[in-house]
Each structure stands twice: as structure tokens, then as C-alpha cells.
Image 1: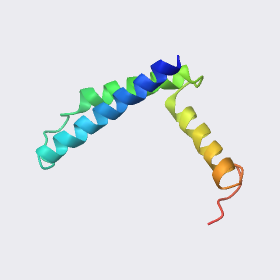
Image 2: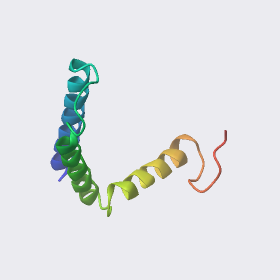
Image 3: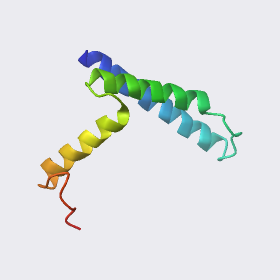
Image 4: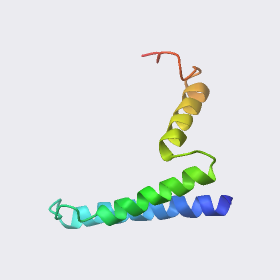
Length: 84
């Protein structure tokens, strides 16, 4: 399962890089909805990754990661106010 998670992250990164490259080559003049299918695929990949990590959706996964970051790197709880 760990390999699958790594592969999903790799696929997400590849698709995001492809979108960025396409935007650069078209000088930002891509037609509306040009990347909708790719964004939908990225969303499905995030959903699959969240499921594999034991979360119900990507939003819950992101909230948990933010709470861990706050606790480990800023030495505070997620419920406390930020120090700045």
C-alpha cells in the first residue's frame, strides 16, 4: 500500500506539472475548461490517497496534516491561537 501512495503522489505531481507547462506554452491563454478533465483526475487521485491514509476525504487529511505541523514545528496545538 505504501508503494501505491507514492505512485499516486507521483501521478498528481506529473499532472500538475503538465498543466503548468501547458499554461506556460500557451502564455496563459488556454481556453476555458481546457484542464477540467485533468483537475477531475487529480481530485480522484487525492480522494484515493485520502482513503489509503485512512481519512474520509482530502479535506480531513489536510486538516490533520496541518494540526501535526502546528504541533511538531510550531510547538502548539491546532486549537491554540497562532503565535503571530
